[in-house]
Length: 302
Image (cartoon, rainbow, N blue to C red):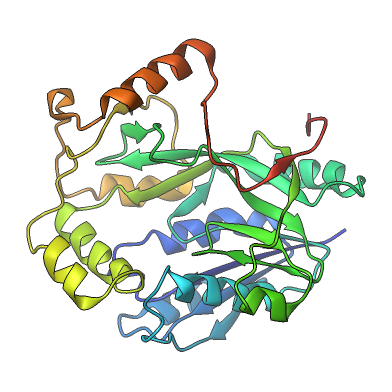
């Protein structure tokens, strides 16, 4: 059985995305890697081409700057990549998501096991969301603990909402019509996604937030909510310390950090209701009323 990978990126250098580490981390796990490169002006495409890996297939795309609602352009770019994949299973990483170097073997084994079950569509993978630097993670109700990042490459599966996850639809027409689709049935995998979206220079992150928000909100919202000040990492509910090992692909990025973050728990903006739910979660290891864009199938990958 062969496995495809796909991702998308636009102006990854300018916005500080670790897209090269992300691509390098995914390559050992797949037999081909489709990279959809938007119309960039910062050398992003050239950097990917310079990897000179035979598994990589670059698809050039032009972003529709008028798709400014609900992050539809991200789903569009994801679907372009998915449509170009050719293998039995496919793995999707966004360009701020990294696999540990020990992950590919386990991921392929988990996919092999899931593939033997007709009632399983994909794999659900846990996330580590880094915030402020590379020593703190955000693990509250503001984040998703799990998401689908590997699934059977069959007709009818499309990116859901802004490409956070995936669902199955009766037809392409029903997807375009805005139907909700059917949640995928998945097995849980222990392969962790290291997510670095909010681990970058606060001024660079502000640029990223502006670029990202343009595809969610109108100009007035951006004017009212996006400033030219550095992003304040302490405007957060609760952070936890991370003492594990980062993927080797992030070594250069981490060593090149050019900002400092001093976490101040006293500035927490966690609401009383969320404090209670957070307390319950830590005591019971259950997240009550959690949104799930998936259906857990019986059994585990290991």
